[in-house]
Image (cartoon, rainbow, N blue to C red; front, side, top):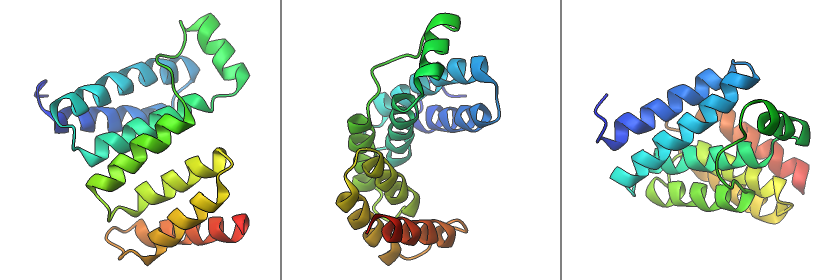
Length: 156
């Protein structure tokens, strides 16, 4: 890995995030630290990296919404969760991802989910409406558009 390359750090953060999805609690806490470190490095080297902003937003969202049991266990058993994550920081980061790549439907869907969690349902609906108007560019896009349509239905 080129330690001074934004893309290398971004790829590491994504890989660690995917691994964390299938890991136990201790590994997830360790991964959260590593993900944050790599995504911060990616943004240090390239402030316009849409993917890195998206990962940072997802990191804030996941950490901010840990249950009190998960947070207590992480603090007691694993040395805590790094950083001061919040849903507002998640929304801010994902909006930056959209600013740098306004065609990525996943970014819109994830932003809508953050808004939903924040109780900002109309913003979530608006973001989803924008997403379903975008051209599908990846194999996942039709599924993401359908999830956006479902979220619109659920929130209206």
